[in-house]
Amino acid sequence: MPNEGGNFVFQVITIVGTSPESWEKATASAVETASKKVQVVGVKVEEFDTHVENGKVLLFGVKLKVTIKF
Image (cartoon, rainbow, N blue to C red; front, side):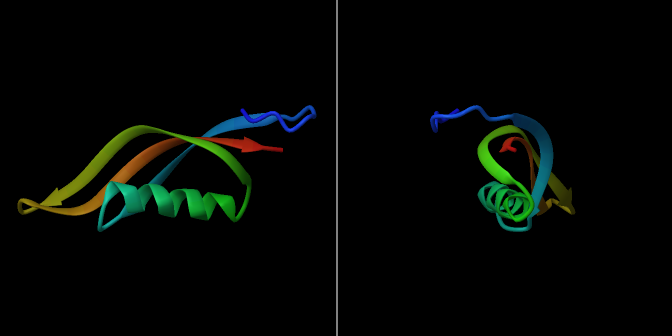
């Protein structure tokens, strides 16, 4: 965690992001959406998923551990 010269409280939460295009876009979308509600200071990708139908990938998913600052 970055040291900004003070005492802070952090929480780690799990979120899931999805995209029909890529895991990278799923991650970016999840982080951007979470950042509208809380101050995100770190992200760790925990898991990658895909939803497949008839041999085609329809949706990319990522499970993220997100560190937020209060």
